[in-house]
Image: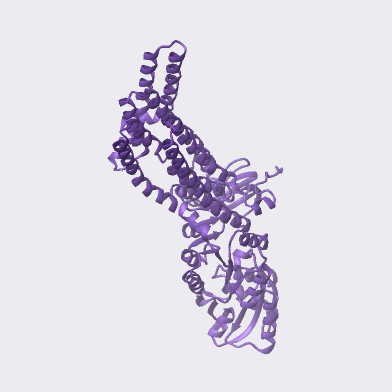
Length: 637
């Protein structure tokens, strides 16, 4: 074990020494005509170079793996037997030098991960009773308050409790722009305060922060193998013994030991083994730089095959920043009714309920807040509660129907008018009598329509919207965005049923939701995609997380998946074509051991450089958009 660690640590030096010895050997032969010195020097070079290769081959054999190193080691032994020290020296040097170049180029594909890791905060300024104290970030606990000044990183996930500042959230979203943070705003670990100062109460610390989870997810994803990689691993297990058998058969029938040894060398499937993993790493790294977390090679494979995209509406296709834009009152006093509605909606975190609370806060004068009894939330419908011995129901039409509450002709007309205008509606009734109707509007996310068109251009065949909102509102949004199919008034479990039906019909389905209310559908789809700034549910449940919550990012993620799969196939073709070319050239006498090994190592570099093109990959839609990452302007506090 110690020998292997030593050799691994000094492989580059061994490669350099081998190269120098080869040069000295050829100089001794052609400059001073010292043939014996030439043979001895190249033999020494071969022995030095083959040691780390043979040790790796032995280590693999112990684990019952027939590796490429085994083929090279046997080939060197054969070269020594026939006295071809020049061949063995060149073959081992090229193999080691190829490994060196491979490691260097592979490192470039991991720059996204290194960049993320380098951005990890290491210290925090803890606010104490006596002032402030610089501590290690691991010593901060939930509930502690930390101070972050201009130019410093936020060390925790938390909520602003004092101060004001502009934060660059590029480490979370991939988009470098300043976002103003004020009291009660949420902030994330790893983001940078460009201007101002903030006191932040920690809600998540250490490995539980969003930033730490992002790093962990991307690192795990790059180690998660695609179907192509798994196939190649199985293939290599049988391929190496097959090459050994082929070399043995060549010797038996030709009695040409040199030819058999050359078959061993040229049969090494180096480019095949490295081609798929490097494409996977480069593709996932590209996504990480843009705030797109793709959880592994298998997700990339499946995402590339998706033909049906299913969307939630509120908070996904729309901003989710809803506001009351229409209001109808039929009985009672407005202030009291609005306060009652806001109090009941306070038990829910639904966007429509938040809009009602905000509206009541603006319109209602201060009144006594009622006491709620026996509050019950009905998923996908609304809330019912007992207030002063009265039953209050607030929700959608399904909720009213379930409680046998009817609308008058005038109320039905008002409701119909709001819904035809594309507004979501919430109705409140007391003891079976409708009191209020709220018309609530939401805005479609920027670039959604163009993004959906781009997704269709990339091969998506069907766009489906599933929503708990009413049918008229859903249809209005669907018409605006050219969505193919829409289903409204759905409960969360009914959305799941639709996803299962689409899959049963043979579609490859991706569900895009906000990662919280839609987590069951996200989990049941072939690919679950969360739109949201790193909520725990989004990260844990989905296969792809779009940290920017933007549809251009969705277009890029889908295009990247398709390009990564194509790139993997290109690399596999290059690798197989190279082996075929070498063996055919060997049969016809155009390829020899040293030249064949040179072509073999060159093919490894070709597949690596081909995969590295993914690092800078952009879709046609990306190129048509404004620059994704812009440098923020410095402002003065």
